[in-house]
Image 1 (spheres, rainbow, N blue to C red):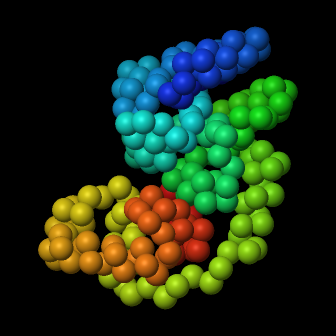
Image 2 (image 1 turned 90 degrees about the vertical axis):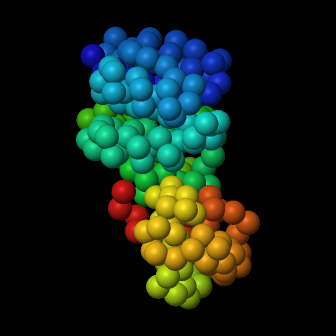
Image 3 (image 1 turned 180 degrees about the vertical axis):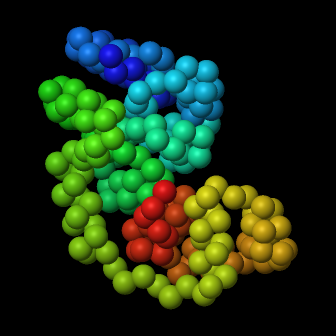
Length: 210
């Protein structure tokens, strides 16, 4: 029996997925969580064979959850099941450590097969997701030239570090960190930290390995 943890902030989505998954004799939903922190507590308390998570959630999104799981349970398979299929989202999720990436419009037969394959450690991408990812890699614009310090700060932001943590790590002031971030946003043409990280993965400025 393959045990699944469902992570989604919408109760109706979790209930629908549970009902669908448990039509299969070899699949069962062992637990449900509405946000990342709750999911981590459940995983630590009750091991499962597979985590199925959305990306956009309050109290810490799916990317943060994937990274945290990879740190605590490196071998645990993770499937992203989301409505967001842009190349930036896909690349960021896979880079964070997701095993598979499916869209919520995946037919039920495809979902069941993906759950089984992902639990066995095989990566699965929705056809539309794979097409988007390949197209994004082919058409990605040339990356802007970043200084060594800017790359260090971008990498630290991708790890979820605060300005204070970055300042202590690099032995510079928080004001200097903020100045570098402003420069990063300008060079990457993005408005915030999350967008900077997504752009970093998309442009090859951040490594794709989790």
